[in-house]
Length: 249
Ligand code: BT5
Image (cartoon, rainbow, N blue to C red; front, side, top):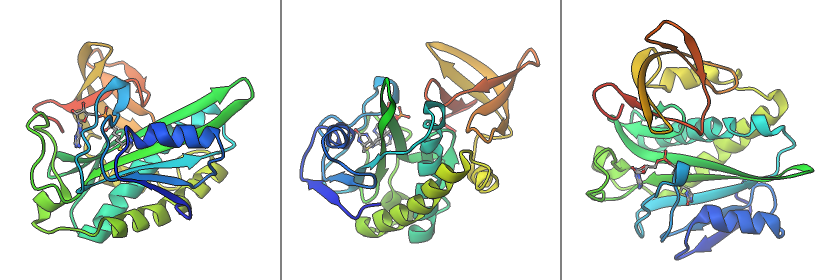
């Protein structure tokens, strides 16, 4: 991971660039980094604000031989690895908000967006995009639930050190995931960092909102909840957002 890095001062979105590169001659493990994204993307068509000079805006090209239903879990693998990297470089008590947020003191510092390109032959490539607010002194007023590593610790960090740590940990977990094809080899550690497990949560799905109790995370990365009628439901990553009952977490 990251032996070849393409660096941009400015780009629309590192995910868009990585998808294009992957279609041309981009190889597994190639990384796109940008100092600023003018059209950074979140999930479900949302925007990811990517100001200049203080964040990590990074996309990794992957070419796994996996079934399509094994790809969304890479969001959890990458989120877990970034959570670990942030913890080891900064000492901050970073946690995971299932499925794709890393939070510090209940505010979002990082999001992950996994996209795949499939055709009749199967998966052509996958791009895992990771955004981290690192040295921001303030966050945009439109982001009341966001923070940066610097704001939470009062210190600035070397972004390269975080990227290096992340890529090292991610390579190891990605290789293992391809071999095992489920998350069981780190699920206990994931759950230990996960803030929305064993809690009542609000599920936002296709403009509907309902409350349920988050009981378990499956080895396939799904969230298993019990709704107010007492029925169990399996929630897949990608199609939902999850909130706390009284706030973001
Ligand atoms: C995500 O989506 O959290 C995925 C973010 C992935 C960003 C990376 S950066 C490198 C790569 N290239 C891209 O174009 N994207 C990836 P989602 O869960 O949908 O959260 C999006 C929501 O987070 C937005 O609607 C805002 O409310 C909030 N948000 C936007 N920018 C933020 C920021 N910088 N920090 C924290 N929250 C933000």
